[in-house]
Amino acid sequence: MKKIIFSKSSIVTIILFSLVLGSYYHKKETLQQSDSPLPKSEKIPDQKQITGEKKENPCQESENIINALVRKLYKTLGSNEEEVKKNRTLFLHQDESLKKILIENNECGANSASRLANIYSHFGFKDKANEYHKIVLDFAEKGNATAIENLCDYDSVTTEEQKVHFCKLVIENAKEDSKISAVHFLGQLYFEESKEDDLLELCNKAGDNKSHCHMLYLFPLADKFYKEKQYERAIKFYEKIEPYDTQGIYLIANQLAEIYAHGMGTGINYSAAIAWYKKALEKNYNDTLYSAIMNNMGNVYNLQKDFVNSFKCYKQAAIMGSAQGKRNVAIQYLYGHGIIQDYQEAYAWINVAIAQGLDENQDSAEQMKNWLNYKLIEQDKTGNELKHAKELAQKYYKKYVLHESPTATSN
Image 1 (tube, rainbow, N blue to C red):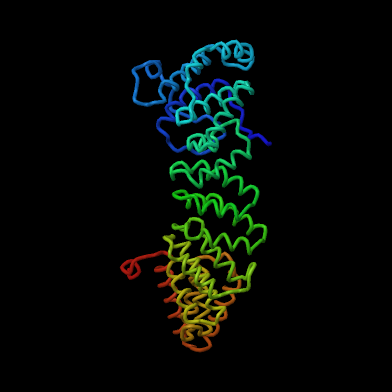
Image 2: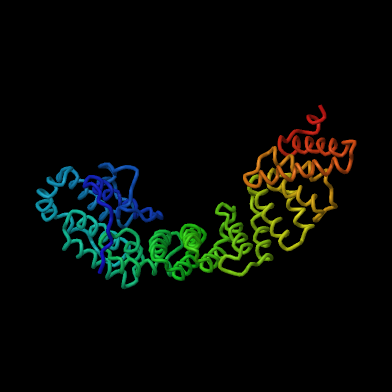
């Protein structure tokens, strides 16, 4: 069976991590999966913590012995690999204190066996590591919850097959605050192997970590399918995870709207596109993003020949700052779509759009402006209509681009 491979740490770091594992087990804090199988801590316990007064913690004696062992290892073995190779055999085999550790099928026994398996593994004693690892496995198979969590979480001797098995048990049976490591391990594994059904099932069973699982693993998987143009699979997962994108950070609703509007992996569905745009607009977006989404929704209404709603969307987008929205308002006035045809309004809005700057269609906007200029002069040789249109353009520019107050515009 394939072994789990962890990153190679220095011997000193390993020893320091091992020393503080006792306090980790006592607190039972939830840890995320890391490259090192030994949890980190803020500081090494001092001598008082190891030899001080007895506490109520029933595992304290075993923890003290293992902590003392690690302290001795730190002092005796040295800090480089050559010194370790030279000293480890002499030291570990001669330490009699380990015989005092009572390893029974309970929380204390599972924690002690797990720690010793890790320590022996890191110092090259495979046989001793496997001996303690088998004890943990035996406890786990007998239903020891601590052993099961340890085999899923940080045990460095566990094979991938074993880890998958025990992490699944954690997901099914463990308390909510114990599931995070299992979610991370299985989530990453299923994501890398593109096992979408397994990943979806995992996230649905993740309890308090459900939202975290959906956004950390299912969203990248949906994006991966989208980039690979596997649109049907992308749609499936975007729709599953959208409810968890409560702040709209991942723009999933907008992405789905674009997919349905352009018929990617599905037939064009304008009604679905509009529904998803409306969902996207429920998020607390800034004016720039909100106006862009509103303008895009206006485009879909326009394709449906629903000109009244398209004009409303374009006008709202224009007011909130979208240059494209302003251009589209001008076009609606030009053709009388959703609003009474008005060349003066069309001229005013296209001028504002040009002045603000268009990422696209700048040349066509200039052509439209010139055409309207000609038509307004043609309609009114006195030039009053063109003059009024230019005044409107100034008014709209100050209000919707410079955002000047009415008082400022009147001065």
